[in-house]
Length: 267
Image 1 (tube, helix red, strand yellow):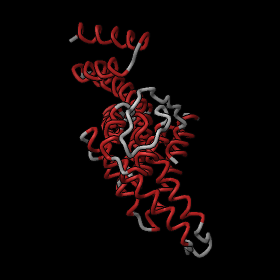
Image 2 (cartoon, helix red, strand yellow):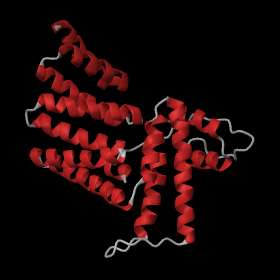
Image 3 (cartoon, one colour):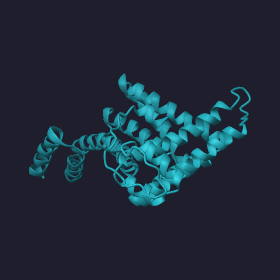
């Protein structure tokens, strides 16, 4: 799953949410528990309110249900024939996971006024068997890109990143598209193609922001800053610095502020 591939550590917020009459008492610091309880209660408005204070957890929480449903389907698929045989219990579990993911995604789309959450989930549950295999192929391609970047085989990383994006985008897998673009952008930057890198990284950054992936957004913005400096695009470099300052704190934010001052002075 995406969360496992990225291996990102997430910290739960301690912001409390007053439950409605129909919502059972749950640990408000556990987004999964709140999400499950609010879905069971059918409390859309409370879900909208809760997501507002837990943006970084939205995609991970919803995606766990999507990945769970896909795992059930894969477990019922014959590797040789490709035939899928799901018993009634598995069918009911998949239906529940899809319904809950849609519940969470609709609420998130309303909370942040961004349709990407709903589109991502609706796309996922619409996939054909071939689409599901393509999705796994995109994940495998991203894994290859990460490995290649780690060994500084930037040509291979570029090919793998582009393959990831080409598989993800037609599926509406916006998380996968972001990862593929980030990988190919990073590879292009190391290969001396600052303009091509900036194009890929910019698209990845916009997807990251829409999906609430602030850590990925920060990483891609930092690479964008480097590309802008190499290309002599000072005003855009300044914009990147300003965005990075807003996403960071402490010494890291101070370092970007110093860079911003130098860019502004050189304008």
